[in-house]
Length: 222
Image (cartoon, rainbow, N blue to C red; front, side, top):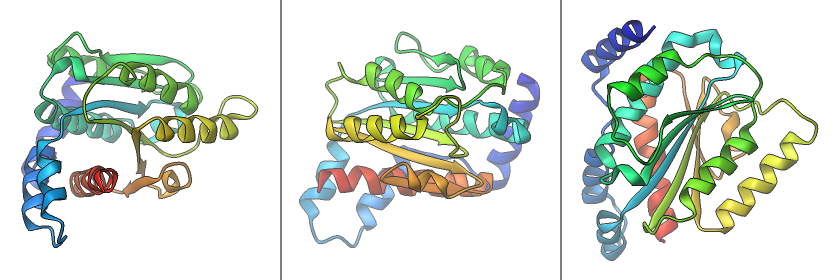
């Protein structure tokens, strides 16, 4: 599985390039048509703490190989963007939580191996995954604390799960965290998150994650 994921990811790199959040910040901030130069300058100075949540429930397993490659693509981007290893974590979630990368380690082959080995099964406890991400971020001192959720947008598994998701989303946004939903082959994440984008291909992933990340970051500055 790990070898297949890496081969697919290398094909993606050759065909579409890579998701590079650092370059995207530089390009968008320098070419933005916003008149507030101070705001653009402030974006360049920001420090970030970031948790990536990857839905590994049964419904995401219908395109398992592609979704593993997408997860590796995002993980590589985060690794090049977040300066401190202690400021970044990556979890897979279903009705279980899988620690793919915690704050004590660098992004490495071990992280890729965990992404390659995590099972796509079970239900989708999205509110609980958000809670775990918020726990990681609450002690962080960075200017922007971001939770990036990659999912098909169907929380499922217990009664009242949609209400729990709404409650958690409002609480964490109100607590100064930025929540971003990336919908896999769907726009449904827009029903749950203030900032969202749908991705229907790896090219979409590379383009849209950068775009929505920057939109969210600049909006929260303004």
